Length: 416
Image 1 (cartoon, helix red, strand yellow):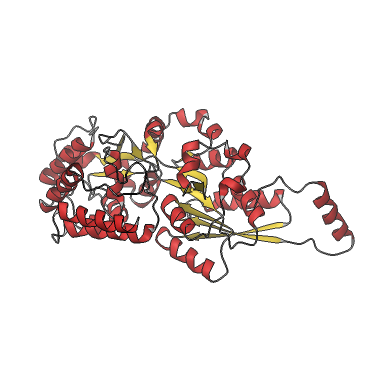
Image 2: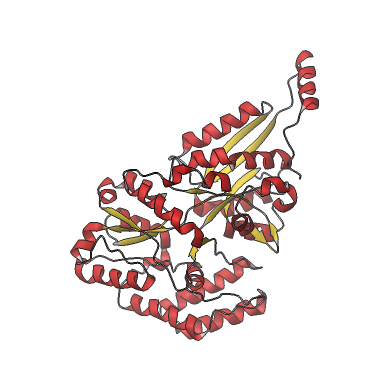
């Protein structure tokens, strides 16, 4: 697949001839999957689809919105069944897993260099597997710290002096639990998110050549032990490991969590679900670890190889991620575009009311620290499962921190 310009004079002539002969012009139907954009962005996506159809009369676009928890398995089932979408929204972790199966179009080969140059290089390369990119960057949301001002006051904390480092956030969480009698935080430890914390603290997961796991050093063990001690002292709930981010958002939205590390766009969901908690919410920069880098999750658009419409799918993906369309999307929610021109727009430096405006200004300042830190490895599903089992085994008393990480590293290195 090479994504080429819109068809030109020859194609127009074919349409005119078929119309004059009373024969309908051939139609192409694209199926476009997004992740959890309904109902908040239904009008926006419908507008995208309508705009593309107006510019490309021979193309129909069927939009399907899929919940985050279901998208990977649903995509694999659709590919296996011979009915894949033509363009699918994936995060970097899903992109690399599907690419490992040889199921995605190589975007380095498919997209012309002039189009690739419109995106930030670091974001274009985030979707790489074995040196090739399989996703067109769409939007990114550097996380910020949001916190409940009322709970901070009950804990004797100054709402105007939020924690600026990870260690300071831990101390604030302990104060909230001890004095306000609700959990102060739910640290991102579920699944593979401990890997991001390792990397944010300058602790590598892989060797420099990517061929060995190295996350069982004394520093890694001490870092894991720190959170195990907090868990044992009941400073965060066990559903941190079981329900992770979903459970944390629910607790915060219910007024039962002091702090939440979250993409700024989630402020709008909290505003919708619980305006009272939204009104008490303050925003601060993400509390930095010692590595001075922030994991900023990236969403991308991929084209399954099983699609019968590679060229049209590529054109549609470039249209969705164009400067104009990304900027319009950013104005509806608190996200950031992956294209250089859109990100330079003065809009991102405007001031407004509500914590989401503050979050937008904060996140702009964090972009220089942001990267998608997803660890891309072969056999990703199996290796991530091993890592998750090791971490859960440590937290639930089945293994010591050292034994858990030693076991996981041995298992990884036997498979890398």
